[in-house]
Length: 518
Image 1 (tube, helix red, strand yellow):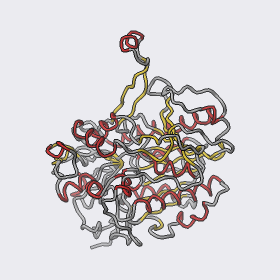
Image 2 (image 1 turned 135 degrees about the vertical axis):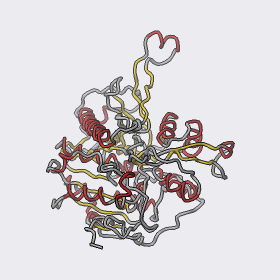
Image 3 (image 1 turned 90 degrees about the vertical axis):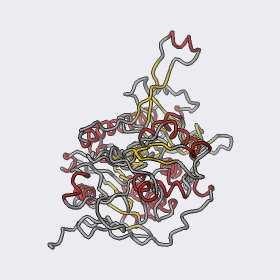
């Protein structure tokens, strides 16, 4: 997914330690403030290396939302002095106190860095290693196609990943399909569009995901269905490594693009007037773009995010209904006019095996979706942001099994306490933490960024990104096998669900024990 960005705050120069600290909000949750980005050095193309641009990264003093793939790796606030920077429910911890190892000597601190077993060499000039989204490791080839219904914002928009027939003549899908997504990411990161668009185009404009665009669907069996929800500031294509792996293992995956103004950019197709179509001699449909909505001055973030998560859950349920409708043989009009044969999906979904999965804000969407739709038999929340979740959810409204997979560097005490409250004593609800991982270990950006960019934006942790995503995917598959009653061999990874194995621990690395009297 794309990173969720933070909002307002004091502008900081992106140079040295200060820039890295502010830039880490890149892909996941809270919007940030403008940072003075001095574009210099060999890693910027052409004349961009001469530009001095402003780009805000980082939360405002009022504690705004997390943006862009939730790149943020912040410590929880400590003491009364931290309160103004992290108001209750803001979801964003403060960096105002604490030692550099992440501990504070007070309740709610991170344990000093968890030792990562056999870490791989992190920084290399090999473009082959860092500029390629990993292929699926399962027995199926993977195809993908986009589906949009209706000519209004109320319709569904998703990217479908699915087991595909082997084909050598089909091209891979573009990772970021439209330039407007670069503009949305630039807005989300508070960068000037002209600079951000050129930077994104230069670095990721040619990136494809290892799934064949509109490849023929592989018939012959009924597949379990997985609905995926992206994080704040992201969109439907940014978690392709996870979605492709699930499809390669025999799942149909519908990655929803949310239209609640939490995506950095999205669109719907609306009809042109007859006169417009004739004048321009083009299609009678045009794209109407919807960009990320920043918090307004004085606006309380929790109210906005809770309202958005309600819409997001409904969009996940709508996507579920849409895929089941197609599987039942009903005709569905795709306004995007792709070459994919939607009739080939008839009788393709195992309606008794349906789950929901998401990252960050998408993790909160998973919880809300489970509470509203019993057809979701279980859910997986990746590095969840609990702020948007309604208080009523904690009153036994989520009965289904739920797996929380956290990164080491993102979580903080208040968030973990909310997760534990939801888990309660339910043995079918689990929480694990991947050692050495960061919030951006889940979206695709971790795979396509080289050393300089990765260090600059904290897109990689101490653990190799391929190992981190394998741990997450394997634990997810083992969990899905158990709770969807799949007849697979994913149970070989059962120990990971209990937090047992290299570079994974049960529960959390955040110490939430009560403070000892001084």
